[in-house]
Length: 255
Image (cartoon, rainbow, N blue to C red; front, side):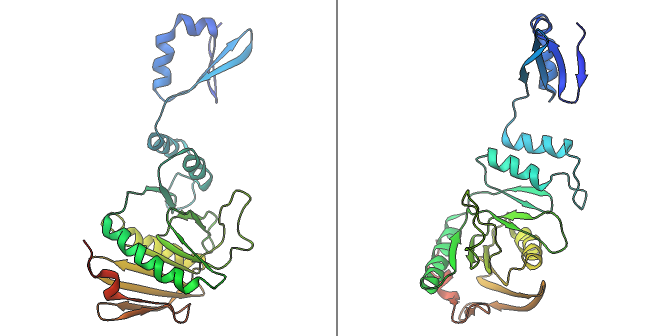
């Protein structure tokens, strides 16, 4: 029987596969599926073995759902990839970004911030969460959300935004990112834009190199206020009265 080409891959009989094993293994190696039939019934599918990141680039090439900017990965495809992967990743403007492990000073600063925030919110309805923690940011006038893992976030809308699987699907009131060399441009530009368009009220950017905090306040999807706090100063939240962070305390005695 002559093999037939379908969208699902090449369909061949078990006999054909046995007789031309090398040929079909080469075909599979070329990122193609082979479906094997026995007595006219489909009994097996052979697919290429790929790693998580290889799968991502395969999806990029084969995807047809373009959102904007010529990007090829849809939100649904990202979710499928991330759920099957052990890698930490974010989805921003149709692109997947793999997340590297943070350095020791990043974690020291994050720990100091968490203690400050957790103490402030311990008697409040809002909760403080640390990465890794996926948040789906629905941007104004755009169909697909971005999926990101802020270093620290404050969520005040938990009551109606937790799924059966325990996923948070709301919008944080405040988010914090600690800059690293590998994420600097993304945090200063792409994430700033996503947070602004998704209804986040306040964004803190912690700059280890400059030893300061850039604090953005948003209103009606636009930047309302912007402040920079350096050594000898105290960063003060606009969204939460009395919430503050001493800059010297954040950066003193780091390794």
